[in-house]
Image (tube, rainbow, N blue to C red; front, side, top):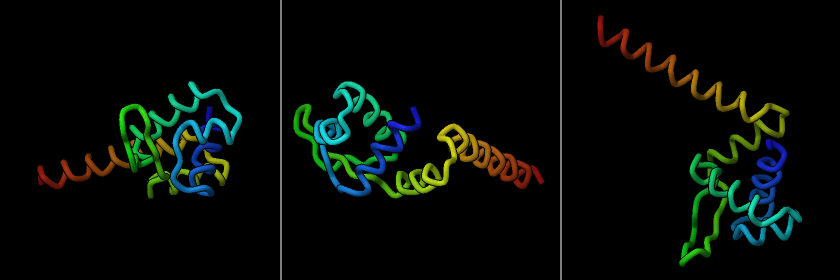
Length: 102
């Protein structure tokens, strides 16, 4: 699964703004897989919607998406990236609550 995510993000970085149909055609991946993956990537904040009219949408890679892609290029898994992010956020919240109690 990480491969399709990496391929899609890399495609957006290299090509710029595109529709899911363009991505599916360029990567030769079934359209339904690309649509589902792009929707998840957009929900996670890795892609930003630029244009939407009816069911037609155009997306571009976000700053967060570029950071994730850089980590994926260095062979980190998406699971590790998300765990690191979530654990880091939990540690910060714990430190803040400790300071508030003091």
